[in-house]
Length: 403
Ligand SMILES: *Cc1c(COP(=O)(O)O)cnc(C)c1O
Image (cartoon, rainbow, N blue to C red; front, side, top):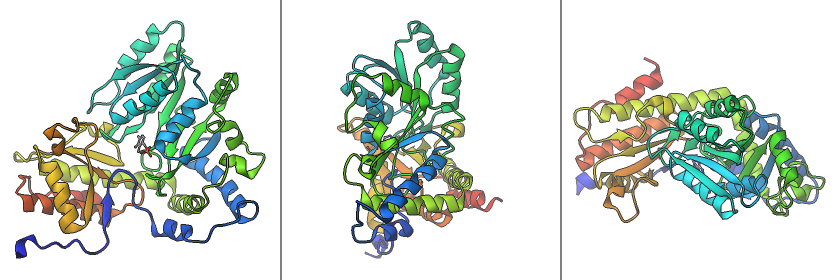
């Protein structure tokens, strides 16, 4: 049937919010025989990553690298600052806030969670109330997700620091930048973040497998007070290795290191400020298209209503029942375009979950990819008879063209 011809052959675009698109340069850097881990170029290459990682995190402080995914980085960070029974505060704005809280609970922490729902940023006043009530300073850390990838909300970490400072509360400020680092502006030192966790497979454009924990001297002092720390997660030898193997607590993630070297070179060459500006421009183009499609009774809605609180790396969207899943399937089958599933918006057995989907636009993405993504979505809605305002792609083109 001519009208259902698939035109999926060709280069695919995996537009899910992680793992992100891996640049050819990163893949090529990884395509090599195993290097010697005992001496030689791998050692100097690894040393060279540290200042560049600091630069991307905007910190002068320490970084420990782990062979793990984001969940591992969560656990690594908490293992260095919490003793069982310590209290932590988690202002949750989506699935990933709950996930980090759960990891803290697994380590024996007492978790106080403030629920901000699935489509709103943190309300600093409510957080301040809780911290103000904590007169004995029992809360040892605030676990804040910068961009929650499930809701695509971006939280104001700088404002959270101001809340702690205004109250003179000594809790550590810990930030999850797994979805935001290398996409949205993040200033670890200027914003007074004590511990930041991230991972390789999103804005850093490397396959999943590396987790990073950045920490300042205040966090290091907390670590020094703990009577015991898991040997494997301990950040002390990793951040200050006397022997090469201590960087990784064992065998180095050899190929990932070559990939990361190439990715950091790309970020340095483009300039971090430009990387942020590129993500912002492309996100604005996506929002302009979505806004237009939602006009004239089109059912498409962005999950985060206020652009000021939207991530530049991921966009969570909803249609009507069934349409989100149908659109994802059509695009994968017919165009070679894969969108992300909705996450944490409805229970797995609730048919409403088929309304939700997400667009990943993090890392190695440019204008033609985003225009292809948006043209694809518009085509899919047309093919499936999903009502939408016309002119979405033109609206995006206007943002990218700047006129
Ligand atoms: C992806 C992500 C995680 C989890 O990372 P995994 O590598 O899947 O363990 C945690 N937090 C945020 C904000 C993320 O985007």
